[in-house]
Figure 1: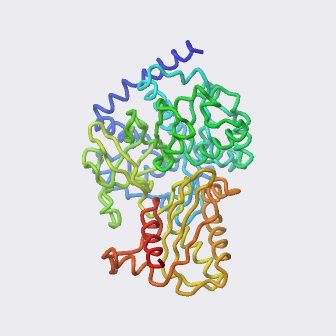
Figure 2 (figure 1 turned 180 degrees about the vertical axis):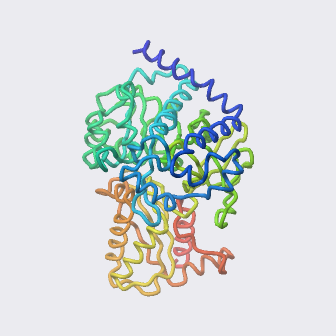
Figure 3 (figure 1 turned 90 degrees about the vertical axis):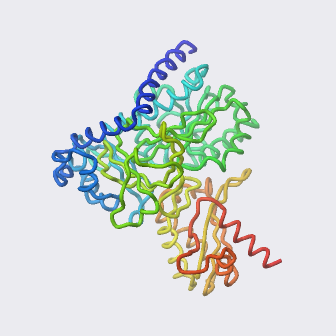
Length: 507
């Protein structure tokens, strides 16, 4: 296995030269991809609609094609879901990545072309290994297996030729043979839909393997780790997998989980590698050991634009090209891809931490949200849940805010709410239950995390005294129409501040 490991490490490191090329010539690489994408799609229905044949410059493209989101592309995607082809992209689209919904849909379905699988998602996976092998030339990763935590949805068949599942399920189903050989557990377990049974089966299937790497969202990785330790009676994962050397993570902010991972994997040599991979594409990889910045990957069949957040509410916001961005400013990402997404705003916000090469960090979403565990609860979800809870308990809400409760010891995470009522619910506990049930009904990712309280427990709700939010805004010198209570936040700054004020007033 040592010889095989050396061969794989050598092969993976060969890609580094190409990565260095786009780091050195980022604008040339992006221009090349822009023209490739436009030329490829000129005879699609979308390409004919916007006359791609006559587009010669990025300026013409920006002037002609409006900024898109899922709702504007939805009519085209629905036709593709029904089997129509050559709509947004010329090659046949047989796969769709199912992800959390927009304001009008419980879930959205992102088209995944053969090109986006090979040139983006799989290329990103291989580059992730290339960068790791380059940074750790003495690694022994390929002497064992990689434990991969798949998604929460089985692959499902839409019709004779079309399939969908969450992104990880789509990727696992299409993995090349060599990659399948090096991963664990087998596909029958990795694609299980019932997460309670899945965690048990994954633990049972992997405790006797030589696991050298783990890939997955921190939320579920912690749940699995606790199952493994419970099953084996060991005190940490290195006692189960002594050759474990790298943890690859993404999707949510890793900072709140870092201390727990240090306890689960007590080694100063453990390598943590962050990636930025979404249903829409693979965007970034942490390329420097010890830095949480991610290298923006520029040769994956994606053409990038960036909207300054101060302009995001403009009717026709101006999008900047890569060469126009500045350091430490918040931008909404706009992408055009080899999967048929055109000037598509994915909803994430980033800052550039370096312009040579282009490195980024994720700063949040274009709207308020909670995504501490991969649940992606947006304000529309919250409003629907609160409206139904009020309707069924006779309550009226004056103001509210919510944030995450992070994992602590053996406890699951959760959401903590502070709600000030104009009219109290006739049954406070019933109000919480209806709110929780409605969130599960309108958001499939929240529902998955709430299953059996495995990752998210029942919401913790504080019934706030009258004028709580008025007094809080007043104390912050933020009374007035332009200042609003933050409805949802992906950290605890507002929750802790308001609770401290309530407790101080009550003392």
